[in-house]
Each structure stands twice: as structure tokens, then as C-alpha cells.
Image 1 (cartoon, rainbow, N blue to C red):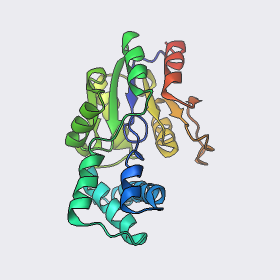
Image 2: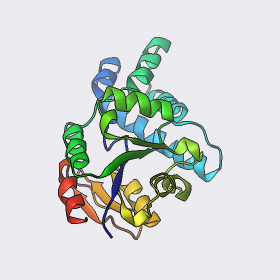
Image 3: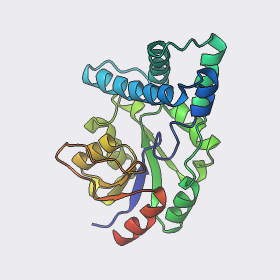
Image 4: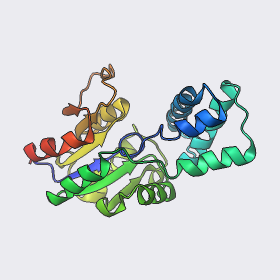
Length: 225
């Protein structure tokens, strides 16, 4: 079945979640990359724990909680102004270099484009605007609507409901292997952006396609129409 629309994950896929590494390094010399990685790990850990336990909290809270844990774990003291500035900066993470050109190319092919993200509506509005992506993404879906994070079926179900398409008519793009697996389980046509050349998660499922950059999506989407 032809792909008629494509939904993108946002954090990690379109936006660089490690885009604050230099700022973290300035605050914690020698630990910037480690702090960034642990911050991201705990942020995602908390989405899973809260969804499993039916104790939803919005993604901006989990982002702050992840930062607080990572800083304490690594012995990094953040003043209140430093913490506030990092959380403010997280709202405007940089886009990956190939994001704009890819979205522009796909929109010119007549595909409906959007995002399906763990971010809150306000986070997504600010982030996509700051990254210059808003004009290419008319459909913005947040799991906040169902109070359950990916990889819950309720989160992925937002796509077919909003687009009035079956999951098999929707392409789903993520750089997160766990998200690619979850979306594949749900029934989306999945493209995994494997920038780090990582092995696929051992979950008994594989994405339809895999590439090293967003730029490779256009050829896949065209061949699938």
C-alpha cells in the first residue's frame, strides 16, 4: 500500500537532543557529553516507568527531572539560574542539518507531513518554530492527548485517527530504535534513521527501511508510493 503521509519523531530525529553538550561542558568541564547522555537516558527512562505505572507527567517535567538526576549523579552543582537556562535552551534545540531540506523535498512530493512526539504541545510549538520546521509540518501530534508515552499503542494511534488513514498508509520516521520498534509493532511503515550505526534492538521486529540520514527518506517514500 502506498505511503500517503509521514510522521516524524521530534527529539533525536528532527532535533539534536545533544545540542546542549557545549553548554553542559562549560558548566561541568570534562563531563559535558556524559551529562548530556545521562540526561537523555533518564528522560526516556521516566517516560517508560510512568507509562507502565499509569502515572503520567508532562514531558517538560520529565526533562527537568532527568536533568536533576543526571547532575546529582555526576556531582554537578547547578545554580537555579543555570538550571533554568538549560531547561529554557532545551525548548529550542537545534535541528539536524538535513532536517529542513528533507522536509522541503518530501512536501514537494505531495505527502502530508507531521510529527508524533512525546513533547507537550507547547514544547513542540516552541521547538519547531525555533528550528524553522513549522511551515513543513502541518500535523503536530503530542502524546499529551492520551497521557501515555511511546511505545504505548494509545500514543501511536493518534496518527491514524488524526490523518484518517490506516497505519499501513503512514510512514513513521525515528532515530530511536525503540521507537522504530514500537511503531513497527503498531503497523506503521517505519524508516529508522540510524545515524550511529547501532544494531537493531532485539525485540523481534525490524523497520521497513534504515538509513544513516534524513536525506535518504525521500527515495524510500517515493519508491513506496
